[in-house]
Image 1: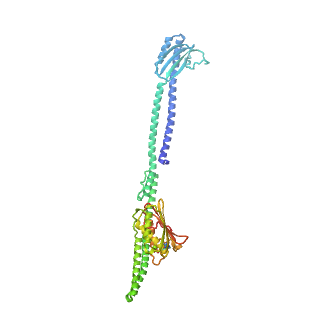
Image 2: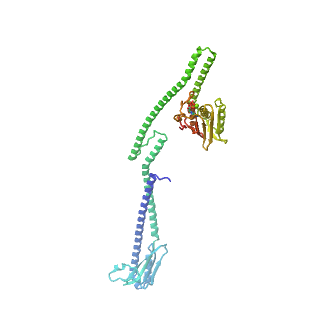
Image 3: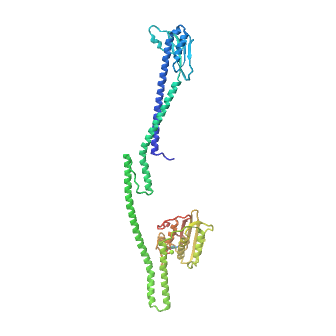
Amino acid sequence: MKTPGIHARLLFAAFMIISVTSFTLGCIGVKMLHGVVESQFEERFQFLARYLALNSELGILIDQRSMLARLAETLMSERDAAKVMIYNSAGERLAESFKEIPGPYVTVSALVRLKAGDEESRAFFWAPLTPDSKDTAGIIGRVEVTYSTFRIARLLRGVTLRFVGFTAGLAALFLLIFYFISLSLVSPLTGLAQTARKIGAGEYGLRMTPGGLPETREVSQAFNAMLDSLEQSWKREAAAHREMARQNLLAEMGKFSMMIAHEIKNPLGIIKSSFDILKTETSEDSRRMLMGYIEEEIQRINGLIEDFLSFAKPAKPSFQPMDVNRMLEEFLDRFQRLDSAKNIKIIRRIPKTSCLSYLDRDLWRRAIDNILKNAVEAGNGRGVIHVDAECREDAWRVEIADEGCGIPEDLLKKIFDPFVTTRVKGTGLGLAYTAQVVSAHGGTVFAKNRKEGGAVFCVEVPREPKMVDLSNGDGVRG
Ligand SMILES: Nc1ncnc2c1ncn2[C@@H]1O[C@H](COP(=O)(O)OP(=O)(O)O)[C@@H](O)[C@H]1O
Ligand SMILES: [Mg+2]
């Protein structure tokens, strides 16, 4: 699950604080208002009940019921009064008046007492008329007033609703304000992340726009300063890299030129001395032999240049789908027809099933040929070559083993480097070319010596095309 960011957390915290606070305060306020309004209402009706009790004294004394009924009627004109009852001390109902209004109802009562002298105020003394009431002196009756709290409840409901609406509006307003505040805090951070991402994707010239707040402005400026210094060091590094590449190229060119010059010098020397002798030589046999030398050396120079050209300017593979097991069989058939392989026995272990892969056939023919030629040379044109092929799910693997002299240990690591040769007439470009082709197909090649004598070359190439830069030495494992 994605962890919520600072913005969401700030908003959530603000929402919780604001809503809990306003809800709690709102509840307390509404509750207090309810209490005050309800007690005011009750007090008013209690006062009315006591007032009625005071006025009913005479009516009860002389049992004047019509007068009491009028008094009750008068109180009924009160808007919320639902029922008024007047009883004498025996509990007999002397007057009653009521009207239909919706509930809920609350009943308050007051005792009717005989006034003693000037203590009129005592009549306002109120106590519930209960059978076990101790102070029963002078009690001649009781009035009961029932009132409805429907109107006040409706009023309070309206007030509560308005209050809830008001606090919700206030909370929303606070949240909105908080949203913009937290946005102004968080947006420089998201901007920073976005800029860093774009710079990572290659837009090196991009910089942060300084924010409005002093702190975020400082962060942006520090970030930009860091990018400036990074850019400068990148530029310095790129320039140093270019210079190094140029120096390497010059050194490589110098090395190759020297090697080529050296390789060509020997045959040229033979050609020149043969030619010098030829000028004065009269014997036909000697002349034929010398011309044979010259032709052979010219061929050698030609072969050297051809090898070098194919190594120095390798063709880009044009991948074609083919059954590589059959392709290998054809290469071997063709190779066996060569004069040099006349006395060689090739033992093949190539699956009869097809192995579809994407390769450049011409490049692979020369690459495999180079390994086979070396194997023949290692066995002095005789012996056995074992060729094993294996078709894996994602790769094709070939092993070419010979029973020749094997590869000297110190040479094992560098036989794939150009111009590494131990043969008098070798160029040292054969395996370098093979490594290049394998690498261009995204594969690997390595050589090792066999326990039973001879060398083995293992080639592995992915069955799906995989283009690789030809200029590096990828694909060769020592
Ligand atoms: N099958 C092999 N057995 C022994 N040594 C080998 C074998 N293949 C290659 N080498 C060694 O690797 C060197 C480089 O081979 P290569 O690049 O084909 O150049 P070249 O054949 O022109 O010498 C050879 O000179 C030889 O010493
Ligand atoms: Mg060779």
